[in-house]
Length: 113
Image 1 (cartoon, rainbow, N blue to C red):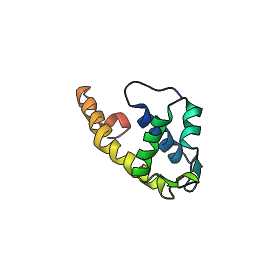
Image 2 (image 1 turned 90 degrees about the vertical axis):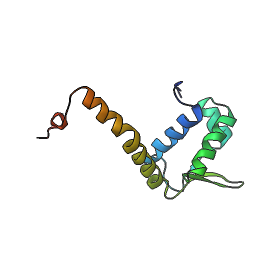
Image 3 (image 1 turned 30 degrees about the vertical axis):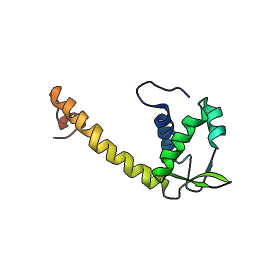
Image 4 (image 1 turned 120 degrees about the horizontal axis):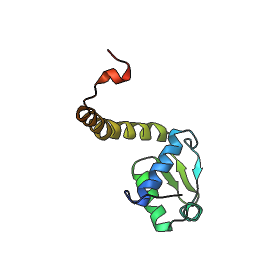
């Protein structure tokens, strides 16, 4: 996995897992690799993986069955979708609208009248 320097690695891992949930690659009830296994697969320290899993658990996206492993929550897709929509509306849309104003663009670029 290639990481960028603009965002902590553990959050990039969270994003990848959330994207896999949104795409349907991971579904509610699916078991995900252990912290050590996933860390070894993508080349990161188990402590970094643990931070990712802790964030996902705190957000209700995955859960731990002690002694068995981590699993995707049944409502994980809805949880991720709601969180990412909220972030898009609060962060991305205002930035896009501001950029459009600076470039003197309006909704007609989208085929509107």
